[in-house]
Image (cartoon, rainbow, N blue to C red):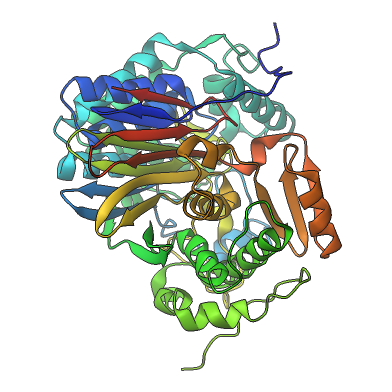
Length: 534
């Protein structure tokens, strides 16, 4: 039986609930969030439990050694958490070049930055949780110890990663990855059980110590020892110095709503910039070539500027406020004509990620995202711990004149972004689309689908997506209307139809009715998405 074969089109409907809802990319993880809600936890506790379980049941996209961001709605106020980690103190441009690299490598020891995920769990639990961190991690520990069967999309990407790693990663520092994720000398199959006792032990230590074991104690010692043995840069002093940062979320207005994102170093404001440019143009028309063209052109201008300028706010050559201003949006909108263009960065004024959404009966809601970056991240696993370390440093530039240039203790331009929607001071709800550089493009399309086309949460996610790839190149999904693809080609876009939807992101949405408290959720049909509801 081929679990990846789907010869017929499927259709999901919006899921409704009242007492609580968790939407994410893996059914077992969503169920752990519901388990915690029924145990007396709130939406934040449920999100922590789901996130921890995702490190076990979807290691192809995230892990304990990754980064996280969150937007948390509690008692009528939205809070932002930036749990992305900085580069190690020993990681300099000179040190990277001394190892023979003329640009940041994508895998191995060099691009590893300080993980923020355990700190995110601890901060969220301490500030907003009702249960202890140890209690919320219990379901994840259980799955790591007892094992679970692989789901179809998980199995697909696990095998793809194994085939790549087996071919390319033969150095000694990669051995623990194969011991952990290919214990039988191969990737586990769809439906086959896999477990990771070391991962369970690590989660237990994180829960018992509110993550102190990871940053100051036994786990930090193991990371430091491994890095020292193999010539890596991340050390115990980098871990002990780390603190997740509570930040003020940033917003832009669109169709009577506020669209919220985490401020830089994250790329969330790219979606906001694109929305601001797009709303300067013609009134959107459903499934119309000109509207679609203007959406793509708005996104490519916003993304070009985002990649040129976004990094740590202190190192940005222009403020976030200016890039979200009406003056910026109007100036960029004037450059959009009837034909596709190769975008050029704005002239400055002088002077393999997981996403989840959770909500509870009390009105608490959370938009949460965590990632090891490129699938399994760096490919480096600390032996016996289940800790797969991220490769987030791969986005640093080795050009010391670039805003995102590598330097010790700096956080890089970051792809993972949670989103949130409000209206007139009331929460509408959390949304997000994971998937590298697709993420702000996914946010943009979900917001337009929801507010311009009035699509329900599931339909807003299911609508065929496009993705700007650079220059005039645009990829579209196989279900994308052919007449629109042809219209884009006539306007100068280089359109490529993709048979596999895997590169178009994976989203989740929960909207809350402010009058009844009823929750309406949509989950991603492009992955093993599920909604657990009460």
